[in-house]
Length: 457
Image: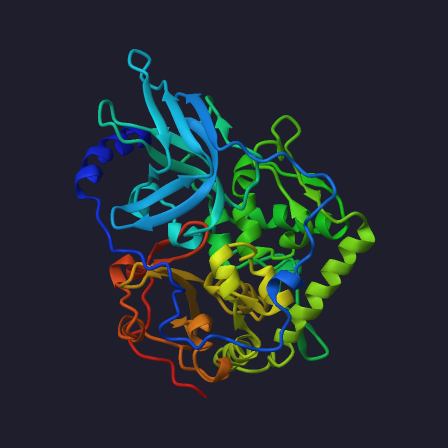
């Protein structure tokens, strides 16, 4: 059965069965964490000034689209007692022409329903309450009267000025990439040790991304990083699927892209020349190089106390301690949902759970330890993201965000947790709802999380 027909069939069932927990709009950690107060300059004053002399006209308050299904929309992914939904930036009117004999009109929409992860494969917890740009399919089972949004790709932030129809868009291919762990990685992608210390290596990828993108992706990624470091704006890209997933890879793997990189999902790939294109917000190579240098200095600050000669556990503990003790939970970012990228954990030492979790998985890869993301909802329906780390061939949970609740993040209360540790910590997580992975997540029940806690050394 084709994916489209399968999804349409599900709508009638979902309309009847869809239910969920009430959402509490407070910070996920407001009940267990102190309100942080320190002398660090606030995020807003520390950020680059994005304002300019040229003021763009205000976006319209309403938007009309006519399409058989495909569209690009800007808005927010949210969840309430009915389930997941998309709140468009503008009040939306859609003329859906998929059924040629029976076009349907949906007027003044402020909400479009979304499917659960098991139906569309999108881990929405990673984007909950964030402004996103979704390239997706608008769909309605004939006569059901409820519009759904099936996401084909998601980019954080507002990457287009206003949404519009994409009549030629279709559902993403289900073709998978081939990955063989026995094939050694290129030398450039190995952890870098200089004078007995780890140094940040921008070419490194997590195992999670390699498993999902395939061995051949390594060659493309090296070419991209070479071009990026040289302030070039394009590189060869033989596989269009790499371009389709480029924004996701940048978010999870390459925090430097958030410094001054811009990529347009629609125009960034030239099919004829098989070339990927991007641009910079920095005005010169010197400015670009300074951003890279500042980032590498910050990243090396977290790595400097990790001894390459130590065991996996001691290396993981040293990195966890160095990172957590430097971080501050940023309630302003939690409210605004702006600048949640891992880049800001390195540069400002502030962020929210997804900021910390992405940065930690990147840093663990720098010291040769496998790690990826874990996400789930608390009993109050609040989304949370942390890490799963592989130590001694066993998988453990590590939660740098919750760690900030104890002794300013200087301990190991949430390091090396078993599944039962997580389920019994009072947050209300459910094992069968936890998702592991970034680009292509799976259920935690399939990840063999350790039955016992890791004993701190």
